[in-house]
Image 1 (cartoon, one colour):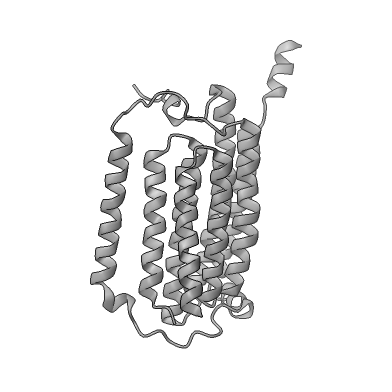
Image 2 (tube, each protein chain N blue to C red):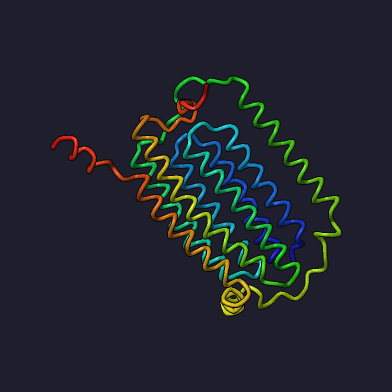
Length: 174
Length: 100
């Protein structure tokens, strides 16, 4: 049962990722990426990380992708690539480099089996919200606080970047 | 029980699709979504290793990666909107003012 679920979800994830890269309409790309994030969330549940699966669905597939869709529709940037290609050999070169990268990662993962194929220990409770929060608020308290400052800086930076310069224009007129 | 190897292989495939997306596509928004795909595949590998070692540290790392990704998306999309206001385009080939 677990194997069947893994294989199905993996096929859906890879297919959605490929469709995301290949589709010409950016809105379709965003929807395929949501499908990919949801299938990866199912894999998180399979890996005994229910808290992170829930966070993946709410934060990634929910908040972040809604932001993406909002910006795509705000800018009307569904088909931004209609002009001619500036560098003709870019697509084949990108594909060859991608295949080379996959071969490299596969080789390292295959050769490093001692590292990866360690016996899977009993990991029943590692993903429970209680376990995660106990570690988050003791061992990882400092990174947690740094992340909160980072989010605050991101909010301020976003406001500064998208602010229209209304004040300056009014001063020039007066 | 699915082996950790299978998860790492799936993560590598998703990461490669993300890299090819950044290299091949010219729409800035789709390139940005490919970067998100790469972050997500790294998260998958982290959680697989977390299960293999039976410790929750990898999952906490993933939690931080998701938070940083949220901040990155907010700032990146704000940059995109302000570039679009100045240049009226989201094609990366048209944004080459810094080129000498």
